[in-house]
Length: 121
Ligand SMILES: [Zn+2]
Ligand SMILES: [Zn+2]
Image (cartoon, rainbow, N blue to C red; front, side, top):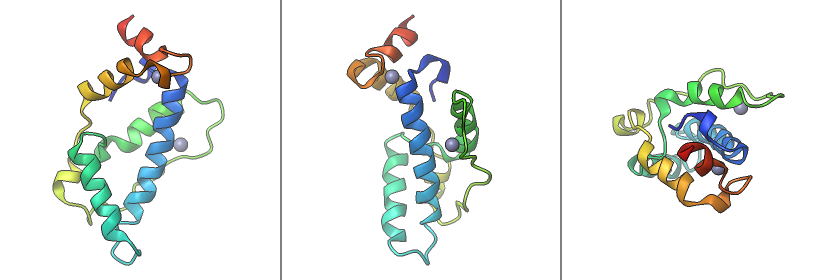
C-alpha cells in the first residue's frame, strides 16, 4: 500500500470507504448468507488482481482514519476469514500497480494531480 501521506484526501476517503465495504463483503462469505459464493468470488478476483490485502486491512484502516478529524467507524475485529481460500487470505496489494494508477489518473484526485505531485515530489 501507498504511504497515506503521499495520497490526496479524495483517495484517502475512497480507500477508507472501500475498506469498510471489504469488511462487509468478508462478513457475507459466511455460507448462511445469500450470495456468499458471489461475495467469495468477488474477493478471489480482487486478490488475484492485487487490489486487497486482508491481513493488513485493520492496520491500513487505522492509518487512513488518522487523516479524519471525526472518525466514527472503527474496525474492531475482522469477520472470520476461514471461508476464503488461502490465496485470498494471504494476498498482497500490488504496490507498483497502485502507485502507477494514482500517478496516471490525475483527474481522479482532488486537487487534480494531488497524488502524482506528492509521489513524484
Ligand atoms: Zn473507518
Ligand atoms: Zn489522489
